[in-house]
Amino acid sequence: MRPSIRRREADISHSLQSAAISPLLKRIYAGRGVVDAAELSLTLKGLIPPERLHGAADAAVLLADAIEGEARVVIVGDFDCDGATSSALAVDLLQQMGLREVSYLVPNRFEFGYGLSPEIVALAAERVPDLIVTVDNGISSIDGVACAREMGISVLVTDHHLPGPTLPQADVIVNPNQPACSFPSKSLAGVGVMFYVLTALRAELRRRDWFRHSGIEEPNLGDALDLVALGTVADVVPLDRNNRILVAAGLARMHAGRARPGIAALFEVAGRDITQASSTDLGFIAGPRLNAAGRLDDMSLGIECLLSQSTLEARPRAEELDRLNRERRQIEQGMQAEALKRLEDADVAADAMPFALSVHDDSFHQGVVGIVASRLKEKFHRPTIVFADAGDGDLKGSGRSLPEVHLRDVLARVDALHPGMIRKFGGHAMAAGLTLDGARFDQFSAAFNEAVAEALGHHPPEPVYDSDGELAGAEVTLPQAEALRAAGPWGQKFPEPVFDGVFDVIDQRIVGERHLKLRLRVDGQMVDGIAFNIEPLDWAEPVQRVGALYRLDVNEFRGERKPQLNIVQVWPE
Image 1: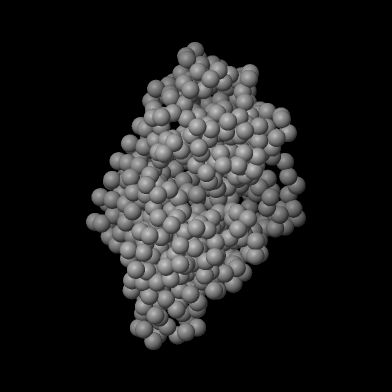
Image 2 (image 1 turned 60 degrees about the vertical axis):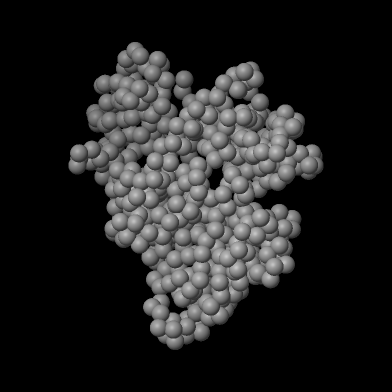
């Protein structure tokens, strides 16, 4: 069945019309809200200056004092890719700037959960720190920060998550989303926030003439941009211009063969050439392998991989991360099958689909619930939360949402209407986590469904796919595919171009059990296409024509580069 497709339509501004780029790219950029052609320049000089990030200058003074005073600093990170890259970035650059005693601590998600809790403060206190620095967390750690201050430990919070009504009483808070901050880019990832803090710190140390007096070579912050790019893309934050600049600079280092050994090793174990990496590869190749450590084991393995100083150090760590990622995929497949069975048993049918889905099973793995929620959200086009047992009668859930539903706001609505049901929650518009009183799961499911229904005006969401229009046969070429790849970086809120069209089918076959390989023709031009994870029975009989929603990409095989359609949706015509 033909999906619902909405072609992007936007006026091309005079500035964009005058740019020295192809008509196709003008159309694509206009469809993503680009008005001024200057927005297409992604040089580092276009970054918003650090002095505009509230608290960055104060954080720089606090850290500079710690360096000069030979303080002991503990970095408290998060157990995802953003947290791992943030932690590695902080440890690496603080050491380069002369901080002698800096270590990191990442809460084990199964023992402590997320953020700077009092329990994590107690663990950090065993290292007798003078200063705790949170990265990619801390904005909701009211009790943890208070506990640290009571122990006489200073706290610097660097975070990007949305704050609650009360901020922690830290010495300094750096978060573009805190009420006092007018930083234009609210979409910085945690690693981006830390990069800004360290940029401000280098400037502060320059003012103190620290590098000359201490005989330390001033670090080149550009060397760290591969970490910033990876964490930014993997955290799926919107790629506004500021984030695109950071990601483009990090990718440029990889393309030049200057990636740090740990990131290069992650690509190597995946059998991919990092010098050809795209932003999509960061999200689907490197990111999941790092995340696997936090999901199944201990994110320290991922951080150590990123901190590796040589290929000899990095390779075995990357191989272990690759093994964990394969294990994660197996667990995910089993959980997804069980979740689908649960929904089937609950009589969740297409013609009576609730506005939101909540799924729980005693066998579910805490570290994988977010991925399964994402898969179910994509399959059913509904905001979805998947729960696993957390012990002591509680459930831990991870949710994924649709652009029309701000997930954190919905959870706040449920919490306000049903006090005490949700133990704690936090997150973003598209993803959030929570701890729930397990005895009230059914009550939560109903309340969550009603809150989502309210957010949608009681109109069930229908999947609509955005398209950048149709490509003529003459445009389905290798140079065009390469130009589209180079025109990024693409990502959240700045999506990779997707096109739709109708093709003659020259050949079709099933490969790898569930993938449809096609040989297509349009306007006399021949091109290969592949659609992943289709239902084989639907394509058991040959068809003469198909409609497709697709990305034009480059397929590299045995040294040969050809254009290929990576098909998102396909249907017989």
